[in-house]
Length: 196
Image 1 (tube, rainbow, N blue to C red):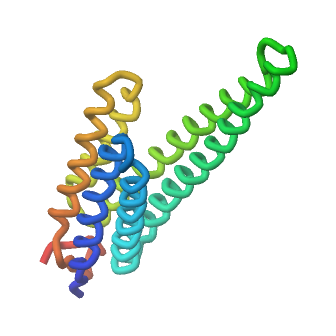
Image 2 (image 1 turned 120 degrees about the vertical axis):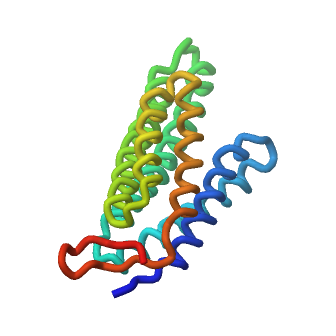
């Protein structure tokens, strides 16, 4: 039985381009907030694509894992921002009262950064699992390559080369959706998918 993935291909392709544009153009002053919103729209489109793929192929892992990644990223970012703001606001009040250093403020700043790091690690872990599961379901090699480049980019993100590898992963993600066939057919004998 043939399964149409045309809409999922388009959603994923557009979403991936928006996430890439939002991520790299978001650092520009004045348009950063707008690009953040564009990136969020892209994430929603990717979720829709993975939801459709999972529903049509009978496996919700790609959607579930990617959803965990998005939730971890948003929740971690919100919590980190709150902690950093509270920490930054508490430092001047302690200095005015005669204390030279606010240990509470410094601790909150540090905790906010640790929360952000933990959220990034959890998010990347689940994103890698989402792309591996999508590769297993569709057979599109670029999904597997996306996961591999993402993993190495995350590991090496402390140096500049890691950021380049994350860019390569984003490009492979776009290529993966571009190469996603518009129709897949489930084989009755083995249960595997065959491009029709």
